[in-house]
Amino acid sequence: MKLVDTSAWVEFLRRAGDPQAKRAVARLLEDGLTVYTCPIRFELLSGVRPEEEGDLQQALGLSHHILFEPDDWREAAALERLLRKQGVKIPRNDLFAATVAIRTGLALVCRDAHFSAIAKVVGNRLLVEQI
Image 1 (tube, rainbow, N blue to C red):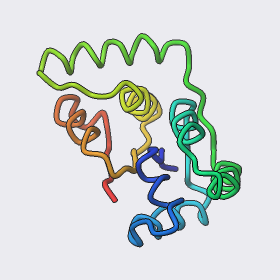
Image 2: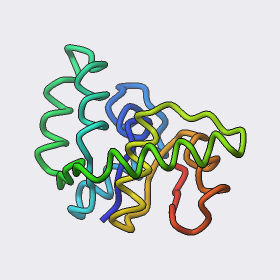
Image 3: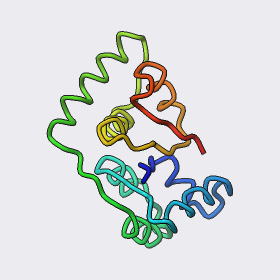
Image 4: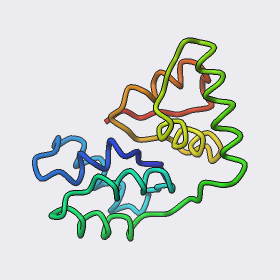
């Protein structure tokens, strides 16, 4: 299973999205390997276009949901402090997704350079797959 970030879902859902990204997410969906977490779902629901909403609901329905646990807040805050010490500023929703990926050991599938920046600081604790 792989945690699919908002950036990858958005490309998958766009009618004119990047074909390589669309294929990568479609393969994961077909194989039952897609995972999302609460912050990713929030970002998707808040930005979905009306014509994409049905596709989003169907894709999430075929995916596994991992809850953002109470201890994840503390871990995300610690991660943000660590990154700030290194001069790295990351949007909080990306910190939340990275926290879940680190906790679960799942690779994070994305199209977002923020995750590579996090991985440079935390090392192999965060597995990033850019598509």
